[in-house]
Length: 448
Ligand code: UD1
Image (cartoon, rainbow, N blue to C red; front, side, top):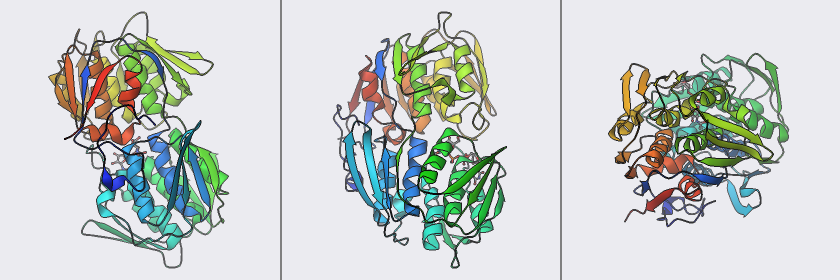
């Protein structure tokens, strides 16, 4: 947990996440042009820790998570869980920030709508609460403005497991008075959230659930690892199919959250973009899937060392690439924006196609304000590399757009002021502070 910068205090989250400080009105002032050298500790993965925290709802026993990232989404989910009656205990030690959750009593009626609206991943509560309590009522979740992000696969899967679900004026009401039962479920698309939600529900449902066309993101493997440590019976039968023998009494578990592969890919881009050299501990190139070889082609060199990887610019410099976002092991949509920031300064042209979300180019206008040459046609952004970016006042519209604008600010001449900092805070634990430790000139300006 990084605490070196002054932060305002957000009282809403204070009880459940006493370490939380930043507030939405903060902004970053980045003076670009410095080469970054040093060691950047990659935090636990945001997309892994959220379902892991929810998994504690499935058991009355203690679940302890190590390497928890101190980010806004974690603070919001902790607050949601606390309001549901889950006991939380935080500690800090050699394994980073640790959280022990105790869901010996769950009060499903106490979901906080305002908090659910702050985070899309709160929909994961639905499967777990329904499976544990037989009923759940949840406002439709909020989160990033990056597309439709329906939850129809989640609801169809839970219905197949015996839930009765109604949607009324922005509220999801679900009940399974006789409990959930196993089912054969085919996901129309390998949705990360739907896979996790249905997995969480299936572990407690009576009988066997077969889940076809699951998402294969590494964070799902992390969740399966933790659930199996709690005694769940989950078999990966290959070909994107999971077989879950439900109805098991779960114990507690102690689990270390996997490293954040998106933060890792982003900071590797920062090293190459600023022509610096950054040591990334506890990481391995395989976590990047198809993005690994593509980043190498773009001029991001990753050298394995005993403790992880060293990232730097390849001797031939940065070069344009064509990429299309895909479910894992394809190129991660969460790396699209940061990699686009890199490509704005690469030699030649790049075609960046976003195939997962419909509205994930909202960083393009902001990058253009900084001098980037990008044209969008449908789902493809055509990027022509420029020799320099200029600092500007820019606003982040989602978590990954925020990271992209930080990268652009680090490479730009002059001063970049980044608003919409709550988006950066949602997904990253102290990114600005960790970059400062590598030589970046970044000041967090606290809201008045
Ligand atoms: C998760 C990640 C997010 C990442 C995304 C894709 C978390 C907390 N968030 O989001 O960072 O960008 O995976 O890798 O892990 N869809 C439907 N109906 C559904 C579910 C999904 O149409 O019921 C569509 C969505 O609109 C989207 C696509 O499927 O176009 C992928 O969504 P999904 O994989 O579910 O993403 P999230 O779980 O929301």
